[in-house]
Length: 434
Image (cartoon, rainbow, N blue to C red):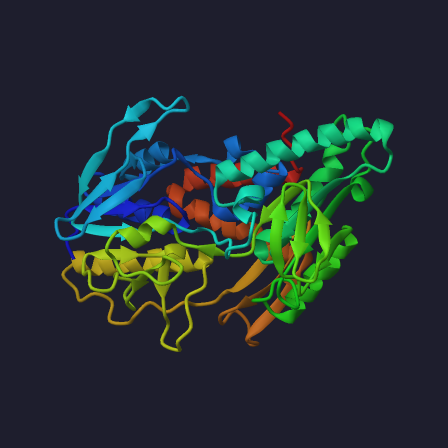
């Protein structure tokens, strides 16, 4: 392992945390982070950005600021090529909104490379899915959804004058955490929107929200107690859930399932699955059918001693044959594992003798600013898991975000300011209308 220059590509939860920890230890001459965006947003917050209850401009953390505070170098641009033998990464040119070149193409040398570029939506070949749905893959998509929803609400308010039966129909395909959290957040936001000048709109009746899920229940990977509690809370918010529903076609105003049922959809969100970016399969590294980089137990890409991968873009198989799930806690744990391995190497010690082992500490699902449900696991209690809901679950959910802030901001004063800012923003839901 050559730690003279560590290049981390992708500033998501895992990549950014690793860059901050290594930067504080080794400094900007040895640690570089590459990302195609100028700012970082914790991905589990994107449903709040989409609903308008979280201001993207307040939540985003500047990569240059983080680089300055944590001692790493930041390079703006998207990875577009790799010379593994020559240890070079190609970075694409950066263009402005008008298409003019801001930064040219560049080549970056590395001693050790860490690829942490996350994931994007997997449409599974469903006709019209890519063209007529919005996916919350990143901040820009979430912001686009918010703006489209506001335009639709303004139009609905005008339509209600002549047609009292007019409605805004939102369909969310996929009832995993993203789909469920977005539905709950949208319902909360629609009630606030209706008080901001849209006087003709009754949010509960005129804004319909439908979740379509292919599995027999929502949140299919979580315990039945969590799924059942979440379903009850969704129904209390007048959100319709259709299970065992296989979507086969999507058009600009409609969703069609395999049973011939049609669902009106003025806005349609795809939250039914993820895969790694397609360009990873063009780097000459081993990938699986979902474009994920195949890694060994120590998170090195198979056949490449100086290339690591972590997070959603890494296919990491555990000793029992299961795959590490694509969750923020996985990326956090993997970043910590690689950091410790690099520290051991720097100190002349043997790298970690045990392979990375995913530890499931439970899952929490936000259902608005005042309620969450989930399960806590991993030795916190005598039982193998503990069902939690209400204020306690909401507090635990918020703490996950604060832990991420702690990892990337560094310095107790900075962290305390971030905590205060975080809590103030969530004390009263913010709906950004412009």
